[in-house]
Image 1: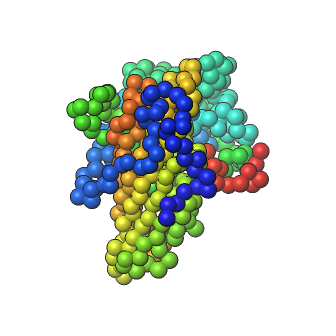
Image 2: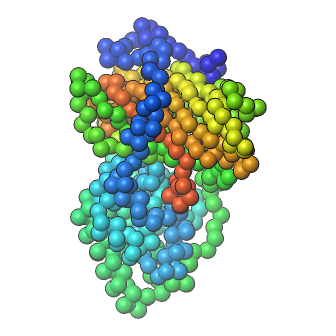
Length: 92
Length: 344
């Protein structure tokens, strides 16, 4: 039994008006092949970040501006804030 | 995300941020509007900075700011270039030294600047799942066949996110009787969270989560492969097809285009170990592999719309402050909290 929302609104691709690109890209059912268990660890390693891709994470980032203010006051240092619309340390 | 790979990979930027400053990173979207002392403090700093007063093309205040604990701006910039970042930090440190030499030294730090506790804006509580399951997610394009019509233009692109499950939700990953050979489909609240908020193409930049009706197929199951003392070994398998069609922009702040589509059609495979004594997952290695297609306003796929392979890896997060980074999603939606329970 599939675990699906109550009304997933599956629309056959042929009923959707639009560009050739849209019709080509829509899928009526999953097509992805199963992951080969023999390739599982190698693929994980391929995706995970290498050390040289995580140099930014060697900075001892605080994650709360208020806590950073307390530390800055305690240690008598200025604050360096990296602010983005989306968390700079996560998905942005 | 380019500034992680460029400016913040620079040895001198890393050294200065680590040794000369208290480095902090935050999502400024809530800070720009939240109604509490922390939001007010951020706006006090940001309005002295590079985007102070700006409303067009957006009111964003993103960037890098150096300032005192009391809120006195030392320097600011919005850059991904290491040399500009180094110059900004050097300027900030010179002003910091100058301020400390001046007569108003008490305003730049020390006990006078210790912030008082404040009442947090109830729209932005901490949802961090203490004693729950926290996964680090890594997203990357996978190699394309040589015959693919679009060469892989940015093989170094990588992005991260975090997935949160509460302590009460962890048993939902297990059959009720954890015996070898027992198998169970994961319930919709778990599948929904993974499919809508994590099986996304954010490799080159953030993208909106899927709506519930974009999840066209989602089935994820776990099977007990072995039980040893208090350890339950599980294999997770699944298939998810997410797709959306409609009109939206595929470049920041540009016009919307009709007839667009985006999707991710993937299979999942996981190797999990749950300890019934500690009631924690000791291992949660999960892989999603499939094809993504289309683009959205901020995910930088405008030249790369055709189906191409993409992989997502999940693993248990560590215990550093960075590992408490929240998921990218609106967390009220993420935890499916009813509208009547959400503060306005």
